[in-house]
Amino acid sequence: MATRQLHPAELLLLLVAIACLPGCARSVATIGSAREAFAIGDLPAASATLKEVAKHDSQVRETAELDMAIIELATGSPAAAERRLRAMRDRFDTFAKINPVSETAAVLTDDNAKRFRPAGYEEVMIRTMLALCSLAGDQVDAESYTLQAIKRQSKLAAKAKQRGLDGGNIYQPIAIAPYLRGVLREATHHDYDDASRYYQLARTVQPDFTAAAVDIARSENGNHSDQGNGVLYVISCVGRGPILQETVAPTTTATLAIASSVLNSATNQAHDDDSHQTNENRDETDASDPEEVPALPNIASVTVPEVVIPESPVASVGIIVNGEPIGRTETLTNVAELAIRQNQAEMPWTIARAIVRRVTKETTIASIGDAMGLEGTAGSLFHFATASAWSGMEKADTRCWGLLPREIQVLRTELPAGSHQVQIVPLGSEGGVLGDGTRQSITISNGRNQYLIVMAPTPKMHVVAQQNPAEETHLNSAEPLTLSLSD
Image (cartoon, rainbow, N blue to C red; front, side, top):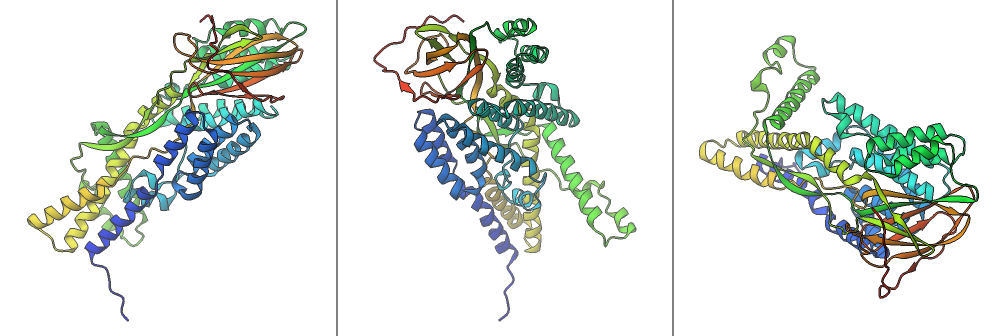
């Protein structure tokens, strides 16, 4: 039995149907539900939802895995979170730069067809969160992770500079990585010069971090802590961090120029790959001939992802030790600012990719219309209707690591060796207590550091203690906590 060949119009409809499938399979709302569950403190629901997403939706599996690491850390399993993040780091590092299959699918559909690759700030934060997991666990690789974060940020800045961007501004060093490296160098009780240098770098990057001056002076004096004392570091992940949402962005002269350059490069590559052309034919069809490059359609706007920061009233975390207010955590790294800055810098290329997709689709439709013999009004109507339907299926790629904090903050306090009761409470921008806090028993050792990792996306907080993981006791909300914490 002879196989019937598809009519060009049928082929186009098939391609459009296939293009629609990835968008239908996405589970953005489910991931959003998991993130909302995390925000209200329902970690079991968040974990169960993310596992379901990772199992059934390959497009968002990597982002669900990243979010799951945050859940594991918040539930007091830093070793599991560290293993997961290490695996994700290695997987992303070994991804091919370009996957021909996903690149082709992305032209037919949108960027969601590509395998997820973390944004630059997410690459750095993977290594930063690895350091926090290690501090809450065995601490073996904490210093290595901080160095990886510093190097990754420097590498991203260099790449951005090669593309003609202000890499030093877009990917300026983050303060948390060198600061933690300084903390770990100081904890050796002999590498004080290194500690001072890293503290100074942290202060340069984050001049508003007032504690840096004390840290620098202390390390220069070569005194980790007074005899009989140890140090408590409270590292808080405060607020809900950046996520991506779809928006409409106008095209500009710059974005059209980038798209035109991409199309020229693609045309040049196509001619270079055509091994059957003669030199004479190559001259006649030289890629520099403007007629060989698809014309840019009149596109006023395209759908793109933009960074938004979900609302959270938590501004900082207050610390009370043995009933005495100690202070509040200070911001070392604003993750939200990192994400916004990078998204804005990359936006011209994001818009240009959308333009290239539109050009490719319209060129394909025009070719099919010609093959069908459609001319005049019928051809125009076919082109307009089909192009509008196909392009209307495009969705912005909003996949991201949605459970990162808005800010990473730190408070250092020196305490006598022995057992202590530490109360941790969420504070608003005016310093008022926002809700229930947690009480944690800790043990301070002479001359050593003790770390508490606080996850405070909203007033519903979770505390992970290094060693002696005493069970948290949630404070009775009917018993007000009166604090007087200085700025």
